[in-house]
Length: 573
Image (cartoon, rainbow, N blue to C red; front, side):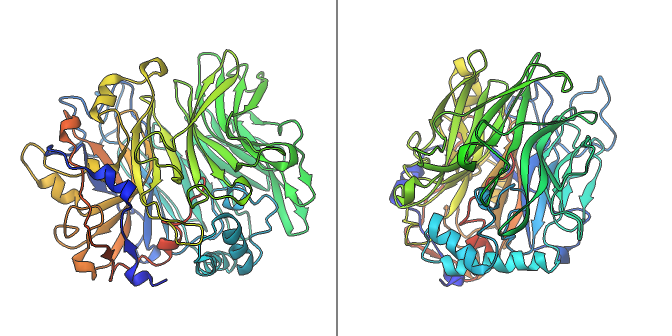
């Protein structure tokens, strides 16, 4: 495959999303966030991973709420002060493909025997079995080369948090580092690796409290009081010295390791138990957490966990697999699943890897995004797969679940093409937002109405004028959003975009426009999408689609084409 002339041509189904409207404005301003405390020669790409939570009642879409021009506070916000309208972004950098995720408990979200990461041929075997691209040899070579650099102690991933008076500037330059979330005061949540120490060590506002230092630990989410993730112990199998993991939650004085589900054991032949908490919501008198757990035959299934108390020392925990996405001995439609987020309305966001005994779904083996409603009075879940529910969620669409806020607004990444991946190439992707749910589920009609009550590629919401002024639209045209990772209740989104750095941005406002006639290098950058106050559905201007396939002659995205745009992985909440 010639990556110098990789084609971006939208499918007929995707093109139906692009019907023109008469609107002339945008919903969001895109703001690039460049690394701080990291020199330019230390990174190639930057990925937006998390956004600082907002104060209750702040809504950047509201009239008179000027989040667009909010600057980082120069002095700390004190009690009684108006809430800050500046929300820090957290990001991490890359120089090359990581090969084996710095976040995941199990490689590729599924390899709990660690059999697919021994050598380059194993990466190709994974691709042949579970992705089935015709480019698996090249894909595997790129991924293995990245992992080999890590084994050779070459640094790849650094993280930073955007600075303000309310947020302590933070840069982590340990060996390899990732960030998964921010607390309301901007403290980082993630994990770091230490050369000759551990590949994964939790970074969170409060420390793990364990008698024995864990072999590995990961932090996925924290509200500043509790932190959640996983704790791993060393276990050896025929593939080498690895680990088994338990879902964990801690508060600085007590750490709770949650048991594996009934039937799950530490080791079953070469398969090692893996489990993790990815997010939680603190109710009046209990904690409801979500993630995945280890079940019979070492299957990893999305799970909801509930405590009897907010006191970790006194609480007991129950757990239940989320309905509709389980893998069992008699049901292998999904290879594995995980829940990544939960909000105050008890809506759970997650994704499940389609496999179905090697039978592709519409020409692909996608990660399918789901939303599950949890009834804590019965411990039952009711699950809806997003595939087929909206035009951008076409049948067989693959996606990555990002986050769901308390307005039931979902962000993530979704396929932007419908070509066959089975025997073909990986599809291109775009970031999306979906105002999900009903008022009975806690959705707010005024917020949903801004989006005309439907899902959108974010690029369609960054196009157009604002009050007759093209300034925002022209600046936005330098970016195409390829992933949305987090959203706070104010509506601010953390994301990753492709950037065209020539004057005026992309040649046209179309989804698949050239950058500099196809002869200009594009970049991968971290961005914030900030809502424009008073925006309505009438301010949405859908981007067109160039009829001639765009040949990105100079857009050498290199390994990114094979990884960011071609491989989904379970990431942060």
